Amino acid sequence: ITGYLEGIQEMSRAGYNDKGQAEAMASLSILAQSAGAVTAEVANQFLIATDASYQFKGNINELTKVLDGANGITNKYAVNLTDIASGMSIAGASASQFNVQVDELAAAIGTMNAVTQLGGETSARAFRYLMGVLSKTTGDYDGEIVDTESLSKAEKALGAIGVKMAEVRDGVTHLRNPMQILKEVATALQGLESTDARKADVLNALGGTNRQASVAALLNNFTMYEQMLSTYAS
Image (cartoon, rainbow, N blue to C red; front, top):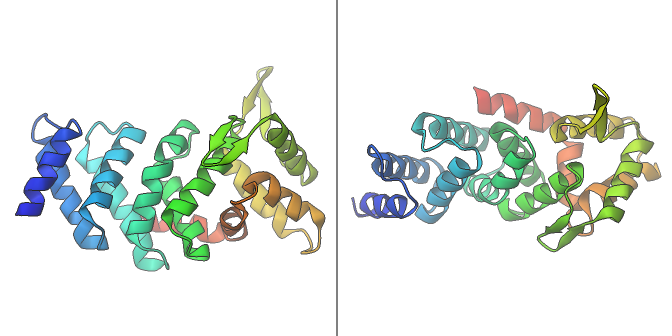
């Protein structure tokens, strides 16, 4: 009871005051804590951040779907809900901005961490950097810089394996969906010899100095990522 009341207070402070939203969010947080053995802090942050990132506006049905999907992944793969929840909390805003759907984010964080076991925060920071590169958005991504030089390197590395970062529609150049780009990159890398220098070039371009292990985990295990998507949906 104490945890539930504290959850209501936390949700109220986060702005959930209409039509019993604070109570409903607190109940969902308790469910997340019970299902995934996560702390109240992680559960609350996960729900609040996901709601804000994907503009669910406190829709409990949508947030329950996210919790069910993420929990389904943890029941089948070597990743826990704390890692997925913390990772999605960190990367959610960037993922949404770059047109990555919530199930795609959960599966990407899940795949990275299931393979590397480096933790949700590490996976999330790698994913944010990766999205920054693919969306051609310069900036400081947790100490990894995306600048014009790194973007040029990425475009060259992907072009060398036949993958384009942008396409022309109706005479206008548009950036392509980042997850579709990654799928094509993963397929292209599978067809290369292990000694092919283009593999290292791609990982260096998409993973920077410190994120290559997580990016490689996603690209080399894209089938797992797609299976996690199916698990999430079911």
